[in-house]
Amino acid sequence: MMERHLPVLIPLTLLTTAVVIPLAGGMSKRLAHPLAMVGTFLSLVFAIWGLARVLLEGPMRYHLGGWIPPIGIELVLDHLSSMMTVIILGVALPVLIHARKSIEAEHPEQVVPFFGICLLLLLGLTGIVLTGDLFNLYVFLEISSLAGYALVAVGDRQAPVAAFRYLILGTAGATFYLLGVGLVFMMTGSLNMADLVGLLPHVQDSPPVIVGFVLMVIGIGLKMALFPLHVWLPDAYTHASSAGSSLLAPLGTKVAAYVLIRLALFVFSREYAREELIVLDVIVWLAFGGIIAGSILAVAQTEMKRMLAYSSVAQIGYIALGIGLGSTLGLIGAMLHIMNHAVMKGALFLVAGNLRLKIGHSDLDRFDYSIQQQMPWSTAGFSVAALSMVGIPPLAGFFSKWYLVLASVEQNAWSAVAVIALGSLISAVYFFRVLERVYLRPPLAMGTATVSQTASNEAPLSMLIPVIALSVGLIVLGLLNAVIIDAAIAPLIPARWEKVP
Image 1 (cartoon, rainbow, N blue to C red):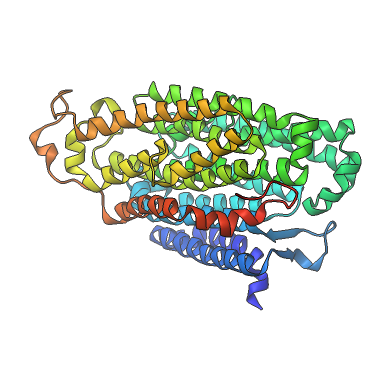
Image 2: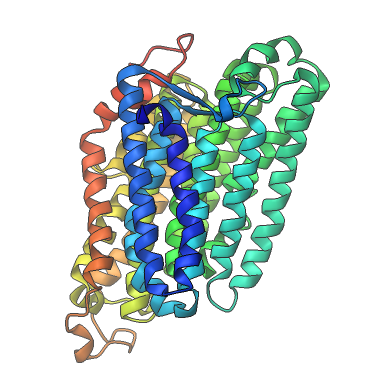
């Protein structure tokens, strides 16, 4: 009986917890973190249960209020949405475990609202991937965006300006998307995605549908920080609190990438997006720009969080490349990289939070091997995640890039192969620069280290375990990549596409 309610139990649990946190926090702010943990954990249990149910028996559809679509609101757990839900909550749980000491140290007066906002963010993100209609996708998109703006605002002195810039561009993206939805609804009379799959072929050549689709892609591109629409991202990730950026960076843009996959490849169909509107070709070229520009700009940074922010622009480019290639191998590469990057970037930002807590900064120019002596486990976790970002086997990052290379070779897109290789080489430059400094640069080289600074100063266990868990997860995901593809990704490939190799 309970199983059939799984699609609604996931967001409902998060919503209930988000409401309870400020009420309980009014009595004692110490209750906020345990409540956030309980809500996220229960939602993750429901998500894993839902994924197992989908893998064994197929998609689940839930009609709110008993109203059947296209009139009623539908929540859908299929292979794509169930996998994304597990990724979102599976990364969020260790981040929230880590967040307590981090937010208490940086912004002790904001503990209760911070965890309430985190649950609202997760509600919005899971709602985006679960909803079966375009308008409710917009509603959940706005819930997650508003929570994201608030998380960015809880940061350093420049955070309000970064949050305002994020707000302006995020609102522009949502407006573009909503205008596109309105045009599509005007021509089809439906907002349900499954219904639109059958309706759109009859009107897809009409100007309103063409303009609507393009507007929706632009809007989602802004939310996804697809180059050159990424200008809000570096400041947002840099100036947000360590805990806030650790939650936003792994998840926010990946869910937007999911929306692009759902719309461009499934609702409107890849044939329409590639052959009639050349949207996928444009996405490929924008991906090239993101990979190269993001990587080069990351090299130029001297602050760790800002370096990781520009690195995210490049990694979003890899995901967009897989989407733009519009093939079975491309989709496999994109989905793997969404999952892998969420884990990799989560681990990296958590380490940045550890550094800020224990040594008071994340300034790359002040790094030397005393950091490795003080914080050996944190630097080990960073090393694993950094090597995965570069694409070193058998870590998870290698396999998603490998499938993107295979997809490019399959289409004779040798320029894409060159861009992937160049982007990986540049990422090696900025990540190995950090590793060289924390493992090899002698103390006092910059006049910043003292003998006392070489004593053990590792992060607390509650901040260390999440880093280690995510780092070990990268090894596991790499070793099990074939199992993940066969079980969760291959079944979502449409029958008319190329067969999974």
